[in-house]
Amino acid sequence: MTDTERKALCDMLMARATELMAGEIGAPIAMMLDTMVTYTAAHACAHLGSPGAAKAFRIAAGKIDAGLFHSVTGEILPGESRH
Image (cartoon, rainbow, N blue to C red; front, side, top):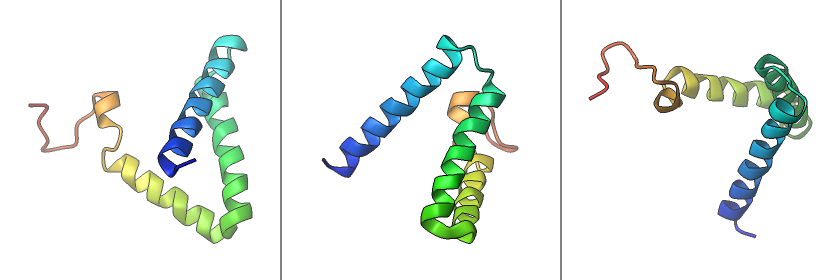
């Protein structure tokens, strides 16, 4: 299996898990986020150590702050245009 195939499968599994949590059991977004982040953080710490996991989360937070998901949320950064 290639890395591209692995990523696609991981994305599909996360989407299905989200559908189950939200749709099947009615978990609120905050609960889903807490569950997924806690699980991910525990595995990151186990594989990267606590400092490595914290660094990975800081990098991810920086990308979010920089607008990684603005196309999804509709947000724009100051000085940006939607055109």
